[in-house]
Length: 499
Image 1 (cartoon, rainbow, N blue to C red):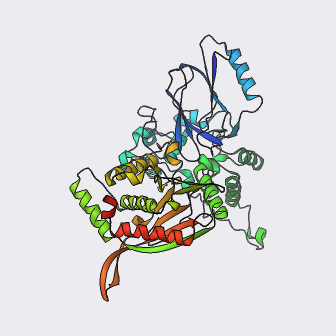
Image 2 (cartoon, rainbow, N blue to C red; image 1 turned 135 degrees about the vertical axis):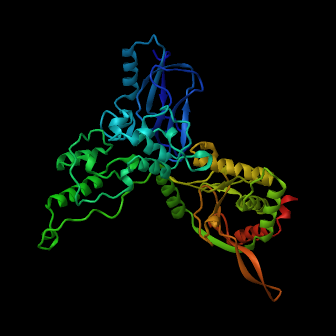
Image 3 (cartoon, one colour; image 1 turned 90 degrees about the vertical axis):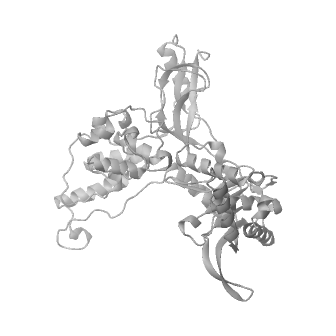
């Protein structure tokens, strides 16, 4: 039996992965698959990856629903020969699970997921909504979109092929989805505050409304229809706090809550809450845990220095003018300058796990990228040995794929040093938290024209503030100062980087 049945399990992508969320199945039960065919998209704490088939076969069962979060090793699906009877597959599943499915969370405790329902049950109404919902090929998995936009599109039954994206390469954002729904006469419910006055209670069936088990149970006890609740939980689910808020609002409509309940005497409706509660996403939880651990475990100290970026900006302009294919940014040049400074001061080109220091020969630099779901830092490998145009192209490629959700797990792992640049947003200077296992991170501020004194004369220079955060367990102040001095020389005399 085992030889003819192949289990498809939740993979472990990276040491820190403990669970993953099923975002989209790319094939259905009964499909024939070859080795390497894409089976399912899985969202981890960092990115969305696609699990591919390890061998050819027939996909007989899909056990994990879209929206479910399952532990590493959980059974997702079954591949088996057509000759294997259903009862043998049932026995195999029972033996494998052994009473523990590995299920952590789901879109709802309803046995029928709203994702699999027809569009008419997901979105109430017709007319203009149908223009973005039912028309077109349903398979929109190849459409570039942010993770949030893709989740909301599934929730509202919207085909992403029918929406025009405003981002790079036509990438669809949450704002694009909001605008499309707005034109169709709909609004994303969790982005708006419900007002109690004048609102009528819903009587429609709420079994398909995504909600946590606690919220669903509380709603039944209080007689609250889940359609009257603002979904403020993860993946657009209704949470316990949302049910409690709906009770207060609906009670205010009926006049059941008065000032007497809070020390007054006259009956007065309680207004709706003027805030929205949002649960942390998996990515944000990972970021929070890593940064909290970094601050708690790594004694940070900071070294600040200003540098004249005038010649660096001149080099940027010259390279872009002389190379038609180049789109070099100031940040690209600063990443190269950091790599060269790390070669001069290799004691900062390290990883530290709390016990051992690993010093590297090449400079693999993590470049921070801000996404809707949080901050990630793809790694640019061997920056010290690459040319400026190559570095620029790699950073742009990594950034674009990160925003499209196409970054690979291995492209986020490792590295010896981090760079975070908020200068393009006008931030003059800031402090950054070290990204373990790195020993340091450089925070880059905006390049601004300021008055400086040179040889007793006031002049105008384009200055920028650099702030280096270091782990004092492995890097001392004098060492950090040496690195900053070297970095300053490369910035102010960039020809040194090209020699």
